[in-house]
Image (cartoon, rainbow over all chains, first blue to last red):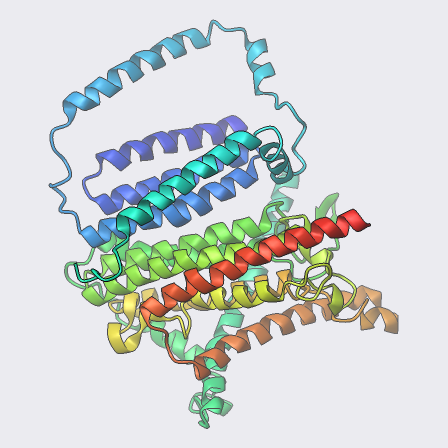
Length: 173
Length: 358
């Protein structure tokens, strides 16, 4: 059953993420990104990480993607303007990825299945309340990376304000 | 497989019951709003259909059902069709985690049934927030797909408004979550049992009065109601994002708006006003000697709280003029957000020192 769900979610994620770059209409691209976020959240739920699933939807689908859509609609991007011939860049990125996946797939059968099941076992039995577990880990073990990440975000925010701000007095500029 | 079938049947029954209650509530609301507005403005409200106008919602529903469904020329047909559904589903899906009555269970063939909540998931309130934020897509896409300037402007305004105020809704809830120590609405409601002084609006060590005010104002803004109804400001935008919609699709938007109102009222009742708990300890039914009927009293209290909150929506509509767009944004970011953040700090400190003292 869980294999079935994983297959569905993974397949949909792959298809919709291809559609995000393949569709000609930017609004449709944004929508397929929305569908993809949903399936990523579904993947989190199958892993019993409900908190991450909810946050995934709230932050990415609820806030960031709405802003994307906002910008796409305000700019009213012409459909042809966005796409130049980008085959060379695409090939440059895709060929290493393809080789890598072939290598990984060919190696997958060779590895010992015992070691893989051992890896997928979570370190702590946190099935009961993963929100609590995430909070505790975030503010004890990973406190420093957490604070660094928030500092980076703060810097980005201040940078955006500095760029967007107009000095008082030359507001008509 | 029969166990799975039985489980499915029970769940479907619960979903159908909740949907029925919500749709009936929405029908009542459409009439109640016009009546209450009428009385507040010294009018009678609708009087023609049925005795005292009480069949007006049915007449409206039939009218919308049989109206011609127009898709404007140049509209994006696919998105124009999908948008109302995208608006409606998130509005209804949140009711799955709302506890309507006491947290009791009974068994059917070895399956535990919780009659008053469809699903008690451990991230209940986040689930509601997640789907509430998706309602914005229906509005934005509906505005964009209509291929009309007024609709587009309405949709864009709504996008900005919903993002701004959803942040405040989320932050105002955090204080309650700190006090309750859980995200599940069932557990949050259970923790407020035993009299109105245990409701999180008044509860020690940190009464959430400021958070409640922020929540009420932000939820009014999030449901696009007066005085925050800029996305559909009729004096400047005709009807905003649903200008081009007619018939059943318009009814979907209408239904979604009212269902959202009911949803935020239910959440307010569950988080701040004790949910189904009576304002006194225990229940009258248990005092009389029929504790098996206590759930009637509890669900009634939930309904009373929800409906008084809904009345507040009408009251605001009859009282306040619409805000200007820059006022709306300034109010959301410079007034509501600092209050909500300050409330989180104060609540955390209070809970921390309260636990130290114990």
